[in-house]
Image (cartoon, rainbow, N blue to C red; front, side, top):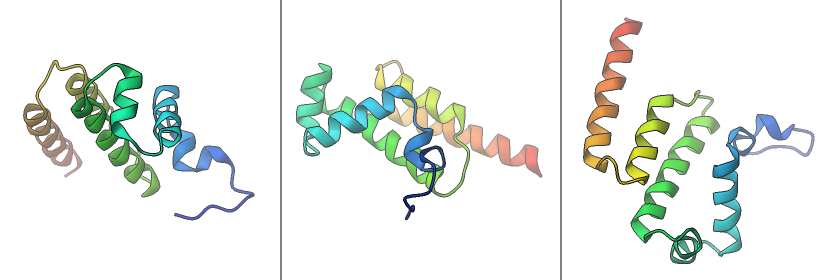
Length: 106
C-alpha cells in the first residue's frame, strides 16, 4: 500500500490502531524486529508476543484492504493473549461467528 505525503495519517492503516497497538509497533521497530526482545520488554513469553504480532498483522491486512475490524476478532485475540482461551478454540469461535454473520447477510 502506498500513501502520499498529503494523505492524512487517519486514512493510513496505522492511523486506525489503538494506543496499545501503536506502542507495540514502536517497541517492535525499536527492537529491530526481535520478538524475543519485545517479549522481555513486556515481561511475557515469546509465543504470547508472536500471537499478538499475528493478530496485529491480520488487523492491518484488513484495514489495508478497506475492511472494518470485527470486534469479535479483537475480543478472541485478547482472550488468547491473556491465556484465557486456546488459539484452537478461538479459531473455532471466530469461524462460527463469521458463518453466523454471513447467514445474516443472506
